Amino acid sequence: DGSYIFVLDRGRVVSRDENNRAIRVMGTHSDVTKQHLMQEQLKEQARKLDSTARMRDVADIMAHLGSWEIDLQTGKVAWSDQMYTIFGYDKRDFEPKRDNAFERMVSADRARITQAMYHAISTFKAPITRLPEDDVEVVLPGGVRRYLRGAGVVVADVDGNPAYMRGSLQDVTERKRIEQELVQQKTELEKFKLAVFGASDHIVIADSNGSIVYVNPAAQTITGYGHDELLGTRVGHKWAVPGPDAAYFEQMLNEVAKSHTKQVGIVRA
Image (cartoon, rainbow, N blue to C red; front, side):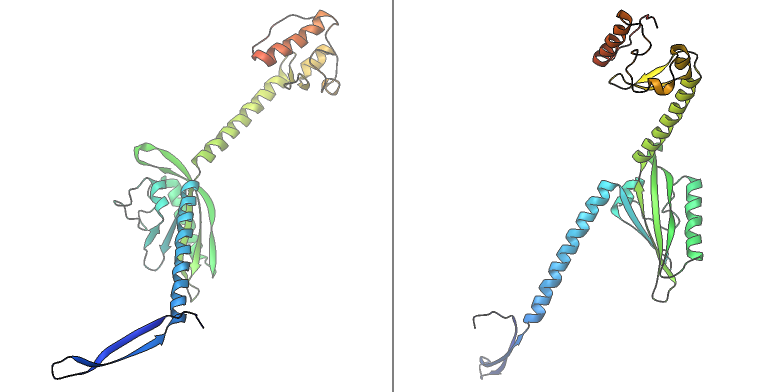
């Protein structure tokens, strides 16, 4: 019918003449089409898995994410390539073991993580028990400090006993720095708010269009207007004397918007 099949070809000489020349050969052909197609499918699956693994490696590198595993029966530790990078080790010179795997963590964090691991094992409930997500600090060669966020699980064997501990560590140093900066900015902002609120000077805060978004109590006392009366109005419109004094505020707003420079002047209210 014009279709193709794959065959396994076997054969051998079964009869020779007096000069040892082959005069009869017997052989077999076995249809192995199904086996061949199955092998091709397995090769394709392996190729896809390899491709997926490579993509996962790239994703781990971009996310600064390393993974680890501890065999709880043998104590053997396995690391992904990114773990060596995160901890600053050369893969050729360092073999992670249960006693040295996390030695670059600061002692307090290492003790806390170790305690959490033992607690997860001692309270294990099959098939899986999660370790609490936690942040740790590590000290790399040269004294460089980095922050890592860790997560993990304890996994059961076929009998329901804890067999493996698997987890990940992600370098979150930059995220930690931003969080600390935001906390610092928030603290400074709170201090600024207190200073402005309690100041005896007339203080007004406006947006980039010159519309008032905040006035302190002293400004309300000096101008005679309440907080709600001034919000949303343009700076100086309500309290400045009409004429050049009112125009001064418009000029000031225009100059500040263009050159971002400090403006100083005297007006009548």
